[in-house]
Length: 217
Image 1 (spheres, helix red, strand yellow):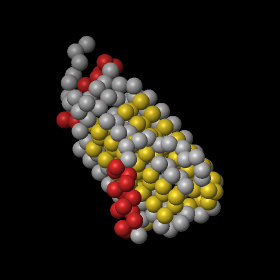
Image 2 (image 1 turned 45 degrees about the horizontal axis):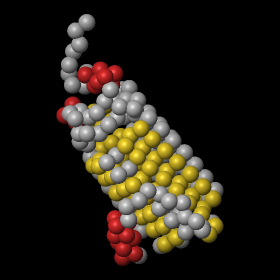
Image 3 (image 1 turned 30 degrees about the vertical axis):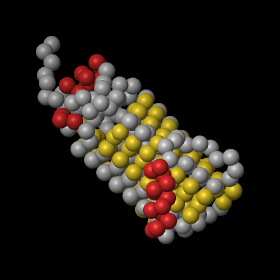
Image 4 (image 1 turned 180 degrees about the vertical axis):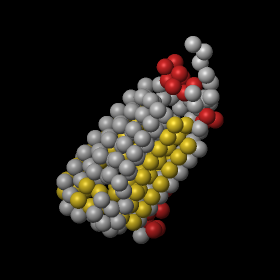
């Protein structure tokens, strides 16, 4: 089982593309504990812990995940209106995956690898990304109020029209990261991480107090 996940991870690294809808899928009503290929899951609840399980070209429609995941791999998958709240995804590998209109409140990504991922119009309040690589990915129109980026690595990441109000950014270099279109009211970020971040003039005023600058009226 571990060998299979390693091979899957190698394949994920070699394919450089965004999510593409598979043409033919088989309806499935439960998750196989090893490999899940070309399945469509609709309105099912997955309450068991998932460990070393792979998902390849799968679609999840209005599914509920209530158990934690560890060392799972997701390749070319689509999650639409799914429930992920208050679970942990630990050491997962995610490649070419679209999360769309999902409930992800309090979701905790720990030591995850995400490449060519897209997070679109999700409720991600209190979501935490910790020690996670987020590469060649896009986050657009998400509610990430009170979320956390901790010890992250960003590369070729797009942040578009997200609500980052009261977000906390720790030990995560933001050099060259463009957050100009995002709401950042109440952002908490270490002063040394602000350097090189791309912001609007209005956002710069929000960040001035973090840098210890006092404006003279």
